[in-house]
Image (cartoon, rainbow, N blue to C red):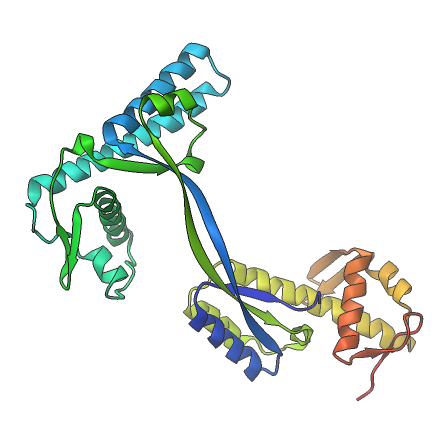
Length: 309
């Protein structure tokens, strides 16, 4: 069905609430769950090895005068800077805490105690820094947990601390360099759940959008929300124009409607804004098929009529 709309959520509760709103507006709707695997290559090694392999790659690029060498070198240099900052963070933590000390509360509160995500730039930066520290400590088996939070279980030399970075963030590293520096490369797979609210084609006759707009604003839905409302408006204008033509003429053939709407400009908002349609025959045929399925049109393809209720 081409008139239906899909809205994707990462939260099942939000998807259920969205579906309830559509049902309250007399729009048919169902929810399906989609599970994907997010696969990423990750490089792991002690700090000195990661820094060493990146510096060696920079030297090789400069010696070979490789194409796009300056750009690639800058990427590697930025990564060395990031790793150095992580090392400094680790060194500072070890200098300020002893094994057995509790460290950090922000990440623990959010992940374990369902705390509130930071809502200011300053608090978010502090949260991300603590998240980075947590990840490094976990990589090196230096964390314990109790009911109060995370505990530093031991300390090591920051230079020996295992760190990591994702392979899709950088240009490829040469195999000989990876072997020389004993860099571990692994494919990390993580499952992700999506909850998809799918409306029926009757959504094009939805007039009252306030409840949906308030819902999306409240949950701070991303920019795809705008795409939903834009798609809906275009489909509503298209369907209204198709039905107007058929009603005025009494009937219209499928082929005539396909010709009419392959390239057509339609005014909206008192003709101050226009929609330019460039639609394939298959799409227009799908619209007509959907209108038949929901009982708005009837008749053979050569003589489509509006159903009078």
